[in-house]
Length: 268
Figure (cartoon, rainbow, N blue to C red):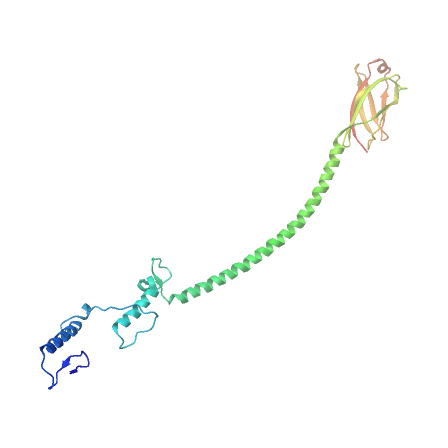
């Protein structure tokens, strides 16, 4: 018995016995095939198709099966993930989450990168200049600090010497006992300043009696007043050799408690 090429419908020949089963089988085959086909009044959108995702991304081909095309499309959507459904931003200001940047913004980004690179280059140049200036200043400062350190050492030594020179030191006083009945004299030196004070009682009068001598010599002769408790005036002076003289013109001084005096001078 012959059959059709598409659906295998049975085609009885003249020599074949007539069987109702053959007619029934053909009717079932046709019914099944028609169920799979759209009737002229049906909509394509109501048609369902089973398909699987393609393994690789390839372009659609005209005339291929719908399920094959849908598998390719599914592969593209899977690879693109969320970007396949994201809004496209054609600017550099959009901040909406999930948006993707349009390719035309690449040139804008490249221009901004170029400008930024130029600005960074200018900053680096200026920074290098500043660094060089700072290094030069530091070198100059180090030189100044070295000089200052040397000056500090010098000043420290000077202060040490000054402190030593400003300490209170006693001045040795020699007495001409041949002309003195009694005496009490103190003398100190602070730096170059010398201070002498005391009371002496000569045993004779005269115009120029050398009664004392200081161990520290003055840089110039100095005259000073002297007096007694009896208001009897006398004069005194120290010469550049350190000799201390008194002018005792009133004989009464020899009988008073003595002559008081205070004076200072600058050492030689």
